[in-house]
Length: 337
Image (cartoon, rainbow, N blue to C red; front, side):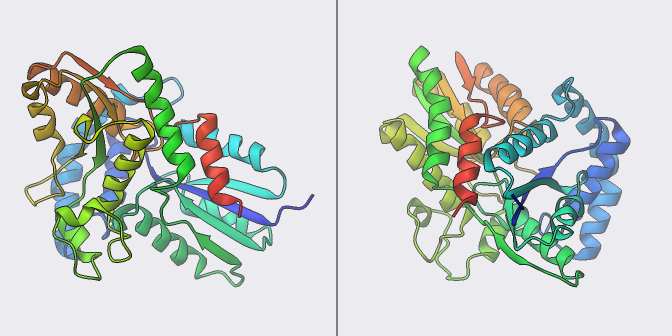
């Protein structure tokens, strides 16, 4: 059987190693993206190359060394596993590749094998459930830039978001339920990667964004609002778990700098939970489909320490979808028409 469809799975990226030079190289490429640090070109160049990369790389290297396993970077390891499992699941009619927006394997390495096969169409599937300009938008832009130089450009389908896909919701709920069956928790916390408010504002073409109750429901006017999509994912997983409204909450992590980011801030929420009598907390991180620095280290260790030192007793992070069979079924559902 001859393949007629290509699938390019694209994730954010990871350093080639946890050593300082490789971490510095990764940070420079990642943070030089104008969709990630959306300030003037000169300001971004000076900030990244004179401040962030030189001074942050040694600190980040130490964290990556904690994250690294015998299989290397978890993000890359799970990516390769998913690529193989999805290829097996889709069969010979499809060719599945893996790329990273930053570092290796590159978007060129993901796209070139598909373009060279004379395929009728290519599906670009960024591994970010909720849409953001700095993640999914950046991937789409990079793919379009790469293929624009090719003589033959087949049909290309971009999957922009799947925050409300029923199988995706069930997959995360299933991971959480196994912990809830073993122990009673006082509260369930949903944590998502944060973004500067200005980036949300730039994407608000309809002018409805107030960073408040406008995110409590999805409509045509705010469909691509990252914050609204995160709250929607929370509600859907909570419904699947039969949680009452006062039994769960949402927060946003990984804030950097002094500019306002979308709220509630994770640190503030976590500090306040024990005082509210919520001392046994189950945590889901549904903006990440593979465990990485932001889940394993930031949520699993740093936020756990913050919770315990403020009077908490039990902090249990739910692992991500990683290379689970349920995640492969989600991807197949998104790909197969």
